[in-house]
Each structure stands twice: as structure tokens, then as C-alpha cells.
Length: 319
Image (cartoon, rainbow, N blue to C red; front, top):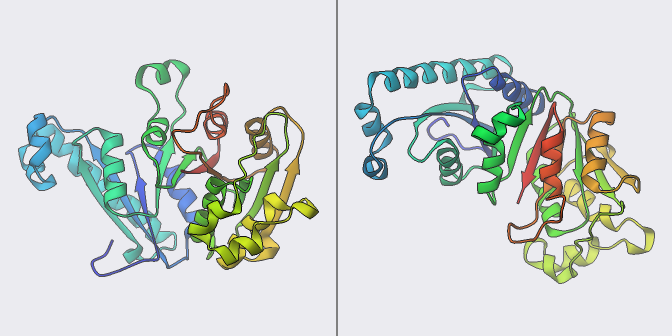
């Protein structure tokens, strides 16, 4: 970010010098262009072959002076690429001060370097892309987005898969701590968006699990008064929606652009979520994720299944 310039929201955007980067930048423009309280830092990672000992103590500047000519050339090319992408965002409505860019010489592999930068820079979110890999490619090289999720707990990760252009957002809710945290992050990120529509979705399917905890479990974050007032609704069947709606309203998101969707069709929630994304044209899905120590069922986690089966949508996963 520009020296001395502070933003309410800071987002790290991992880009590759490939056509997939266009999907990420288009998505950022669709959702955040014209909003002045958010800043983006574009970052790319260039592999460098130095000794393990050197990686531990050399700065980025010292690494750059010690790499071979081919690596230095890739570094310079990446700098030009990121500068071009910054100019594209400015041309699409962002102020120049909102966009910064930098190239990292890899110290611990691409995933490790991106996560180190994301957590060390105190960002509010990380945006990455998802490539369309064949089954064989996934077996041989794995998926960058999957590896990021596997190793990243705590920082919200937005994964752009294909061309995600719709401003309609789907949020699965069950009034559990991890889903309310996801709604809270969404409210923080989109409260200034004048076009976004948010649909809160609850599944009553056969394999849906209830994750409701005693009201006291929410006191530390939300406060007793707020919880006693808004963590209710069993009597009118709106328990799963009310608290999430109130979080959005408290952040300033207008009630007229908040919708409810509840269904009992299908065997399990992941299947239903994928169905609605494909049928109703959602551009973003925001999901809370249970703790890494929580045992998953035979179908793995819902977020895992959704990520593996959707395209042309951005998936924000928190937890």
C-alpha cells in the first residue's frame, strides 16, 4: 500500500502470470470498484534456488542479488506483469493509492510464502484463483487452492474459480459460531457495496448436521445483550436466519437486499448448495468451516465438496 495510506480493509491478492489472473481481477472489479475504504496488494511468487541456510536469514533484497540470471529475469518480468495489472485496476475505477504490488522470491514454496505474507501483513482476506486441473494433474502436482485451504486457518480465503460475474451471494447458515463468523466477515467486506444481494440458505436435508451451541458460547464475541436478543427464533421457525440477518443489518447492509432460502430436498447440504449455485446464478458463496480438529463425515466437509464441484463462482471460506 502507499506509504502512510490506511484502509478499513486490506486484501492480499495472489496472482500468477497466466490467463487465470484475469478472472480474479474481473471479480475484484465487479465487487469492489468505486469503494474507497479497501486496499489491495497484488503479489506474485518466483521460485529461486538457494541453499536452505540462506533462505532462513537472507532478506528479499539479498536473495535477489544472489540468484542466477534466469531467476532475476523472471523476477523482472513478474514486476512488469503486476504493474500492468495494477494499471488495469486503476483504469477500472480504483484509486492508485488503493493498489500496491510486489514480487516475492520463494523461501518456503509458493503456498508457504503466500500464507506467510498474508498472516504477517495483517490482511483481512486472501484472494487466490483456482485452476481447472485434470484428475491426473491433481494426483501429480496437487491443487494450489486446496493446499492453501489445508494450511490456512483463521484468515478468510476467497477462491475465484472461472468467471464469477454475478453480484448475488449465497451464504449457508445454521446459527453455529463458524457460520456466524462467516456472515460477520461478509458484512465487513460488502457493507459498502451498493449492488450485492445476499441470500441466507439453510438446509434441512437428511444428512445436514445441527451445530447449535448454548447461547453462552457466543458471549465473548457478540456480547450477552446482543446474544440474548438475537439468538432466538425457535418459536417462529426463523432461528437459523435471524442472527445472521442482524449481523448484516448492524454492519449497514440494507434489509431489502437480504433474502432467505430454506430447503428439505436432497440428501446432503453440499449437493443442495451446488444445485442452487448452478440454477440461480450466484457469483459468490461464503461458508464457515468447522475447526480442523472436528471430525468430518464420510463425504468430507461441505466446503470441500462444494469447492470440488463448482465453476464460475468465487468461494469464500472462513475458519
